[in-house]
Image (cartoon, rainbow, N blue to C red; front, side):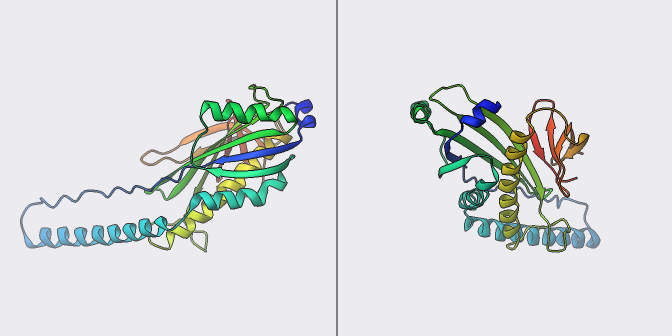
Length: 250
């Protein structure tokens, strides 16, 4: 965002677009067609019992997630963090729908009165194998009734589910839903932190180069190379060569 655009920035209407997606868990299939014999039969029965117990725990997790409103969690967390951004907000709305072209044009045209309109679109995926939550957000801002955006950024967060001792959670159960909520709130906090750091340091290196590995199920992971624009605890903020910002665990 150019300095002159930021100086002219008055009050901002912020719209959070956050789809309430459902979690889908896939269970591994059981191959019980081993050769005959008592030992094989006992092993097969043991595997089936373990898998059934795992499925029951996953069903309990999904049942608990049905009672969770992640969109409201995200809206509430966003509302509590707006004061950390270098702009004044006059409204915050949360919706699951992307505005139509006509609705977007109307919102942009309304900024001729001096206020600005900002979109924050968030989507998320939950990897049930790794027990990792990943969010991707797109932030866009319009001013002066112009369709040209004065600010735009892409922001990625990833966090592993952990218990109270800090250890990675390996199995899903009903209590795991609270950890998903915790990570979602952290994702919103980190998204706001990335926007603030991006506005404060729009260019150049602040701390130095670094490569952080982003997790993906079934593969070793992909290294994200870029420059650290802010270092804080276990979550440095990295900007890659395409100007995408990442908040990843070291």
